[in-house]
Length: 101
Image (cartoon, rainbow, N blue to C red):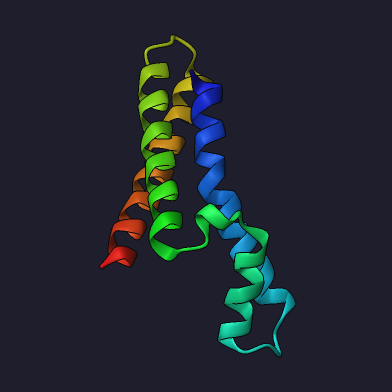
């Protein structure tokens, strides 16, 4: 379950990493050009802001659920990783909720 939580929390992290990568590697491009370059890396299904925010939000929610389920294990390391996933997932969800407004 913990591996599934890590897998699902990696989706928003990769999306943010792609955003940072595009904007750092194209400093002379305008904002519109940077967004077009960013959208070119994503599938057509996820080109809209709402769709991308929804994927990120749902992925974070699923990661939180899997991390909470794996908290019942006796291993201290697993509990620490689960807590980190839950905190990161909650922060990502809050950011997505505020970005949708």
